[in-house]
Image 1 (cartoon, rainbow, N blue to C red):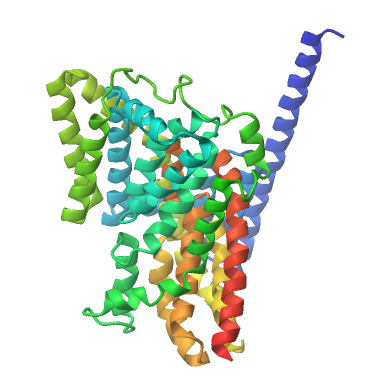
Image 2 (spheres, rainbow, N blue to C red):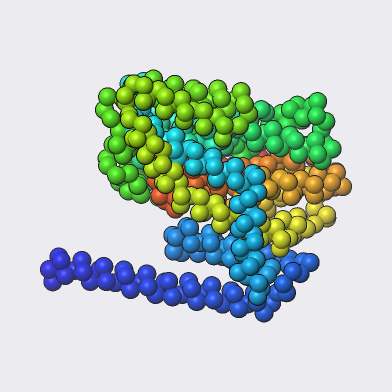
Length: 489
C-alpha cells in the first residue's frame, strides 16, 4: 500500500473515531438532561449533590472533546436547566443579561478587550519585537531568559491581569529564541503572576480579601492590611507554585508529560501567523516604544487604582507616540487595536458562559453544599487542610474566582471559631484554594488571558501547566497538614 493510501486510511479512521466519540458525548449530555429533569424540581430550596453535576459535566466534556468554548456553554446550560427546567431559554437569557450587565463582569470584559487592543498595537508597531531583541541580549542563555520570565510578573504583582498580559506578550518570543516552547513560558508566567499578587498586601486581590475580612469582623478598616499580611506565612500554595516554577526554570524539575512533548516540538499548539511570534512586527521597532507605554500603564494603574483606566491611558499614549514617530499611521493604529480586540472575542464568549455557570451553581447552593460536606466533627488541626483540598477540588472543576471568598468566608470563619481551629490558617487555606483554581482551572480568566498573551492553545496550556501545579498542590496540602498538626497540638 502506498504512503498516500496509508495516510488516507489513517485520516479516515481518525475522523470516524471523532464522529463516534461525538455521538457518545452528546448522548451522555442528553441522558444528563433527562436525569436532571426527572430527579430535580425547579426553584428548589436545596439541590445538594446535584449542584456538582454542571461543573463536572463541563470538565469531562472539555477533557474528552478538547472543545473549550462549547464545554463552557453546556456547563452553563445544565446549571440553568437544573434550576429553571421548562423555562430554560428565558432563564438562560435572563442570567446572561444579568451577568453581562453586572458592573464587575462588564469591567472584566472591557479590560480583556482593552488588553487585546494594547497587545495588538505593541505588535503592529514593532515594539514587542524590539523588546524581544533587547531582552535576548540581557538573557544570554535559556536559564537566564526563564528567570527573567518569572521575575517580570512578580515585579508587576499589583495586578494579576497586568502581570499576565505584559509578561506573556513580552517574553514568549524571547524564550522561543532559546527553543523554549511558548507553553513553558505560559506556565512560568501563570506560576508567578497569581502567587506574586498573593504575596503583595496592596495587590488588587489582596485588598479585596482584606475588605472581606473587615466585612466579616475579622479586621477593622485601620488594620485590614496587617490582617491580610498575617495570612501570608500560611500561603503555602503560592509558595509551592513559585518554588516548582523556579526549579523547572533552572532544570531542577525536568519537562514532564505534555510539556516534554512541547519541548520536542516548540511550534506545536501555537496560534501565530508566522514564526517570529509577531503578526506584523517591524524589524526597526524601538525598545523604548515598548517600555514607555508599559510604564504609563503601570503608573496609571497604580495612581488611579484601575487597570481599565490605566489601559485606556496607555493605549492613548502609545497612539500619540507611534503616530508622532510615524511608526504607524492613524489608520494602522486603529486597525491593530481592533484586530487585538477581535482576537479576544473567543475569550469574551468563554467568560460570558462562565459568568452564567457561576450564577447557576450559586442558585443551586453549590458552595453551601461543599461547606456542609466538611461537617463539624473533624479535629480542629485538620480543618485547614480539609478546606484547601475540598475547595481545591471544586475550584479545579470551575473556579469561582473572588466569588468563592464572598460565599465561603462567612461560613469558614465561624466554623473555624466553633471548632477552635487556627482562624488565620483556615482563611489562608480558603484563599490558597482560590489561588489554585486561578492557577489551574480551565474557567480561570487569568489562565485564558495567559494563553492569549503567549499565543498558545487554551487546552494545551491547561494540560501542560497542570502537572507542575499538581506538584505544588500536593506540597501545599502536606504543609497545611503538618503545620496544622503542629499549631493545633
